[in-house]
Length: 406
Image (cartoon, rainbow, N blue to C red; front, side, top):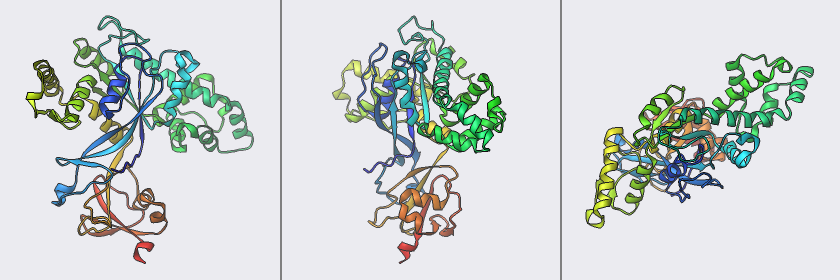
């Protein structure tokens, strides 16, 4: 299966929240898991999946997925995740190898913050009595760590940037975009942050220290959107903390990463019938399981029936479809048979940002296709659509190019 990555998710949090368990459950990639701080030192990278209903049922065809999977009508599109080592208070100043860990965040387009909702780990990630620690503090400290880390990067050249922008009437947005390009920050992010904070970008030398930090904090929220995974939701103290976390203004997803990891591993061994994100599962080979294993699975089933899912797949889907505003588009060559040049039906599914035009999509598939673009054809209505037509979720389109015509 070919892999087509669109955006990178960073899985972050303090040590010992179940962050690496979440990552392993999402990707089945090996990650060292233990109940003590700094188990993860080097970042782990793995492939997870965005789950979306496949369009083949609507078109009443049997598909032949190439860059993704289709299982029981569910299209699973591969995406890349990075498990960043645990971040502790003071990381932006270098504490706990913090700058090294924070540096991994620069490549992430969105962040999944895994929080110990049970309150059973202190601010350093050490075990404590359940309910003793307030997980709201973990969200607040991590916000500050990322903001101050970003502020430190921009601060190095800020006086010069501000003076040059005023004295020579240069574009401050362009200058900041160049300075922050290594963090994946774009001009649009900077413009929106300035607009949100109401700061005068024509007089940046007049910004106070508080203004500067306020601007960077807004930029963090815009350029590195984040959701909260309230992990260990199965523990008795988690529910009250979940309610507090939901008041912080973030999307919060209840989660039991341990349950998802157990289900994924059992499914991998063909012991159960389960797809990531399912609300239930079927034990397929009970004779291969011990009574304790069956009891453990039944305990997990209760979690699924109560919550609807373990939360892991929901977090990935939410990150892509809500935080990053992605849509799914299926390119084909033959709109009558929905095939590519090899005769494969609906072979590929791409995740692209909402607002992507037909012409931009052509470039995403191949540079030459974009350069020779003529028009696109919508497979549903069999109508031509122009280069500026904005694609919709679950569109199936064929790109017609001058090269293809020739």
